[in-house]
Image (tube, rainbow, N blue to C red; front, side):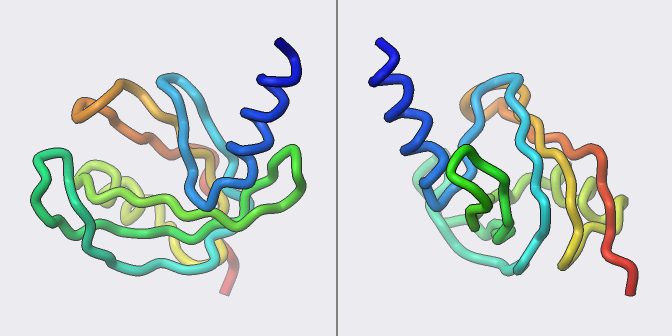
Length: 112
């Protein structure tokens, strides 16, 4: 049903959070803000994660979305690539549940 798929795509585009399926990628056109937040982890305990506030190109135009991740591997990848305010990149999800890994590629950092 096309109408259901269309509505699902619109809801996903307008959601305040980046959500990806296994194997799916998204282009972050600009990181607007980086901050540390506390939220509930997979085990139900509070954990500290990094929140990236990003501009994303969607079917509804440029939308600001949040991406939360606290894995050591993801944080190391950001650090090694010099990702910060103004950077752009592609985020790709691999896996599901607690075995999910988010990889970054095509990083372009803002010249200061």
